Image (cartoon, rainbow, N blue to C red; front, side):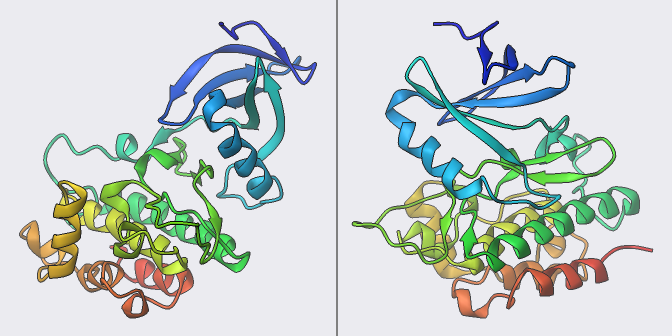
Length: 272
């Protein structure tokens, strides 16, 4: 059944779909004054995921974290009203059709912009981790960047308490961005989110993902580790190579101590 034109919360009119993910459909909705909002609708089989996201994210208030405002049920489907971010996914905002890595020192302006987005993500992670929460699915599709450079972390349906354990081993996240411990089905810690941030940094510096393939192939590559920094891999050794390699260490205890340290080191790599 189409939801277009429906009124939710007696105030917001559903206008059109604006996105579709593995777990939900996102609609644009407007209030009586025409202000835009997003409505995230979960299919009935994933209702519990929607309720879990609302319970976890409803009190999160940070400039670089998307606000989850209200929860309702529409035609048996859990729906969340969230702030609408008029931006593009990170990979779209920093596409590299010319083949030059987006954070290459050969392009100082784009490098500054990309590292600024990662710094803002680091700020969001600082806040989450200080509140005992891990995102567990940090990837380009869950990062929106406005035209002015303001960057926001979205989608908390896979997030949870730091170190959360499940009844059985469960992989949570997106394969190419999952830390080794997540891939093994072990509890995610703050260091797991930092690993995912490291994948983004590696891609920015090299134009490629550090590991790829099936789950088994990625796990095997992670076990072998990386012996070449992303900038070096692209042919231009970079001062941030060491940070990228440390973020992608197999052992969580060998990664940076926290998002604050990562942000400081990212800023040191900005080209004047």
